[in-house]
Image (cartoon, rainbow over all chains, first blue to last red; front, side):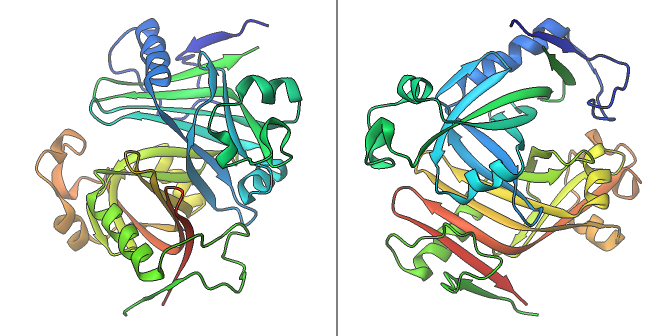
Length: 166
Length: 166
């Protein structure tokens, strides 16, 4: 299903941060800036919550993306992070371009994908280092992030909120 | 009060992630690597929780640090982030060197500092852009992060857990 992006709904809905402010710049420019940042980023920062309720962050190598809506990563099934995400799928991703002071936060949920076809499709040469048994290694898990909303910081120019809805 | 760092307690205490593993390398090397990373980082990534329980991340410019134990940042008092941290002080910081695949997560709590002497000490030229009324601008807040424990990822070499105790 094709999803739509809504930039700056302006209705102060529950998903919107209260401090969303458009200082300058068009909505389409902001969405394109966000998409370009995701495409050009080597790593994304994944935020999740530990069992003790403290937020955790880890840098992740992105395996595939679909616009601003879906991102795929891999992780060890046996890791604390995967256990935390199974218990609490609430997550966020952060992308940053420190040279141009651009930051993008996407907030949504993580699903642990067990489907073998997806694992095969996203397997990369060298993954044997992390998953010695290969594509069918039970310790090889795919994390699928689906965004609900996002917020773009573009230097001092603007802060924008996006809604991502089915 | 001087604090002590405990690397790899090895007793699987509540603060330790279950997946802590020492693959290689000495404890003192790991602590020095972590301190060097904090010192050389231009930005830190701050993790907090929104009122809806979703983790949030934002890049922050660090104003001052004390080893791995205390970090200071500034933020707008009126921002959603400050309101979220007042409601839930649980936080984490993440530092990364993507060239050398080194990542450091520090988990702890954030306190909003209202003491004017601290605000004066951490004020920087150019902050007028964010806080037009200057050092006494009520919208100028200092965030003080105090770490409880940390975890260092050093390439494929090791993952280490630190405890930071009074």
